[in-house]
Length: 158
Length: 399
Ligand SMILES: NC(=O)c1ccc[n+]([C@@H]2O[C@H](COP(=O)([O-])OP(=O)(O)OC[C@H]3O[C@@H](n4cnc5c(N)ncnc54)[C@H](O)[C@@H]3O)[C@@H](O)[C@H]2O)c1
Ligand SMILES: [Fe+2]
Image (spheres, rainbow over the protein chains, first blue to last red):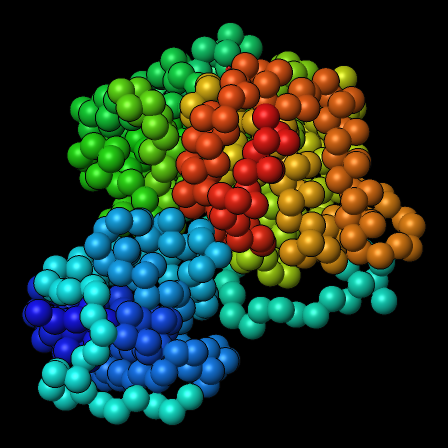
């Protein structure tokens, strides 16, 4: 089964995100959205970047580094990003499982959201559709390595 | 260097400021309401109004004033007057009123009252066009497009709902509050007429006025604060602090200033959302039926103490806006400001703790309030993030 927050998971999300019905629901998404997920169960920090143009995915990036991947953790927020969310893996997993609400995550000291919040609130219906799509992908949350997966890029050095 | 803000650093380089509501202030504005509407191109042709209010406002004779005001020219007639909005509104009621809107071809909604009435009108303006249940629009940005224009005539000096993009109604069955937020919820016009607040009882001047002070203070320390909202929040803090006591003694000048300041604080917090005080008051208010302004007034100074270390310079500026002149450290000045708020609360005869208004003090109650308050959306904008362990002592103090 696909391991949550790995390259294989991103690939599957990307595949599903090409559906025209999905693109219609998220057509307000424009620009770069960055996620940093720290302390994954296999000992890595991971980051995923998604760039949209009117709801269409135009670029995705994926990288991982041994935790604590200081370079990733210290990288300043840039105005090139519409949004950057950072949180521990366990919290991201709980969100994906629906165990905690996005609101609960937002109010937690462990979830860091950067970007213009007024704009992000306005994108809420699109985020909801995106979250729904991602959480519908069947995954396993506990894993110790992802070596058996295809297309897996090497880890960055810390 | 300026005295209040001390030329502080610009912290945010990406923000917006939004105020689509037209604000009109003046004695006698309501008596000439039809004229005020007719000079606006988009309102001049409106002909069939629904007037929404509550019993207390109607009993104070304010509805008659508005009816006289809108029918002073021939264009508008009030097709439906609904005068029984309950405290904190009601989802079943807004659905019922929406069907009347559709049946009567209502093209203008006039809200005369406090936050409960204005929030009701906002819901009706959505459901009157798009139909469905109140719950269909729960959360942020679920309203699909423009709604029936709302003219908001506030009769309390608190919520600022006349200029905000939020509305809350209570679901009677579940007892939960259902919030909606959308840029389509901004009232088209807010009419501030000092004659509409003259009848407000002293206790409600104090409680709704403390709601407005809470809006101003929380907007100023909000994670989303920015210079435009700051200007309004600071000025509102000063005006409320200087006038709330006199307003409870029905000094008409002070009451008019409270009315203006409450709207300014509303504009501030619709751009820089409120924080932990509101998270607590939403929770305690819903669980124990405590007036929104009263719940805020009780929680406010404890939350200020809790947040002080997260942004001492901001609390120092607020204290200076309330008149603290000493040159001390930011923390010390901030603490002086908190003392002023506590002293004000005492002078207004507002209880200091929730137990005095019937909230139980057992550990389970405290846990429940903590848990629900931490999940309230307002916590996302509080300057200090919190978890159960550090939030609990704050709730214990305020209980
Ligand atoms: N939408 C927003 O932005 C926003 C913000 C804060 C609070 N709220 C909501 O507002 C509600 C509270 O509103 P409120 O504090 O204005 O009180 P309210 O509207 O509940 O009114 C309180 C009481 O005051 C009486 N009253 C009002 N004006 C009067 C007058 N001029 N003379 C005599 N009696 C008068 C009413 O009849 C009522 O009994 C809460 O439901 C809260 O959730 C909304
Ligand atoms: Fe409020």
